[in-house]
Image 1 (cartoon, helix red, strand yellow):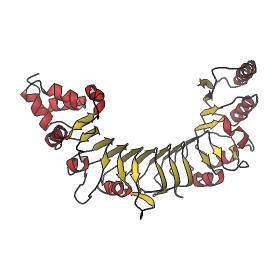
Image 2: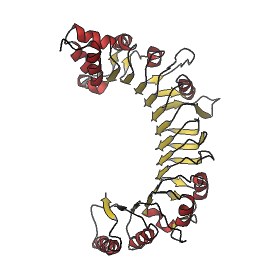
Image 3: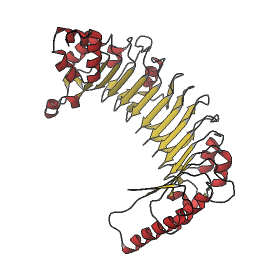
Image 4: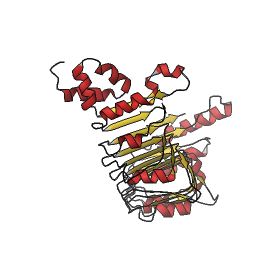
Length: 389
C-alpha cells in the first residue's frame, strides 16, 4: 500500500464519497491524509451517514469542520453532495464557486444572494436542488452562473416569488435535461435552446411554457395539474411522449405533438379528458406517427380510444394495455388493437387486482383470462406478459 501513488489513493477515497468514511480512511497514514487534502474529487456530506446525530436535537453540524473540509478539498473537488444542516448556515455557493466543480447536489439548505458576476461555476454540468429554499430570482441567477450546465433537478424546492415577479423565468442555452418534481407555481417559463429531456412530476402549475429551438426529444408528464401547457411548435425531434395521471384537452395536446413524425414511444396512462366528447383514435395516431414502435394505453381510455379506420400501426412492436376496473369489454378492446399491429412482438397487459374480490369479480377475471388465451392462439408469434398490482 505504501507504494501506491498519492493520486490513486485520492481516487480510492473519492469512491467512498461519504465524509465520515473518508475521515476514517485518511487516518491510515500521512500519505493518505495528503491524498484527501490534495487529490479528492468526490465528497458527500449527509447527516444520514452520522447515526449518532439522529439522537440529538437539533440535527445539525457545526459549520467550522465543514468549512475546513471544503477549504482543504475544493481545489480538486469535481463532485459535491451536500445534505446537512449546520450552525451557522454554510453558503455552499460562495464556498465552492470559481472552482472546477462538475456536479453539485444540495438538499435541505437555503440559497440566498447569488452574484453571478462573482460566484461562477465555469465547469458545472449537473445541479440538483432538493428541499432547498431559494428565490425565483436567485435560481435564475444561479443558472446564469453555470454556462456549461446540462442537467437540472428541482425536487420540492421552496421558491419565493417577489411581488414584482409573477413568472418564474429560467434561461440556459446549454441545458439538456430538466427534472421538476413537487413544484407549485402560477407561471413557469423555461427558455432552453438545447433542451432534450423535460420531465414534470407531481406539479401544480397555472401555466408552463417551454421556449426552445426544436431539440426536445423526451416529454414526460406524471401527475401534473396545469391549465396551460406549451412546449412550442417545433416538435419534429420529439421521440418519446409519456403522459400519466394527467387531465388534458386532447385536441390542444394532440395539436402540440402532431408534428412529431419521428415519435417512437407514446404512453397515455390514466389520462382524463377535459371534455367527455374528446376522442383519441388509432387512425390519427397511425397517420401522424408512422415510426411509432411502443404504444401504451390505459383501460381508462377504452371509451375514448376509437378503433375506427383501417390504417395499421406497422412499426408497433410493443403494445402495453391496462385497466383499473376490469370488464368483459376489455378483451374485445385488446383484440381490436392487436388487429391493427401486424408486426407486434410483445403484448403487456397491466391490471389492478384488489385484495378482497367478490365471486362476480373473480368470474370476470377468469373470463378475461380465458378470452386472452383464446385470442393469443391467433398470435402465436407474440410474447404475452401480465403485470398485476
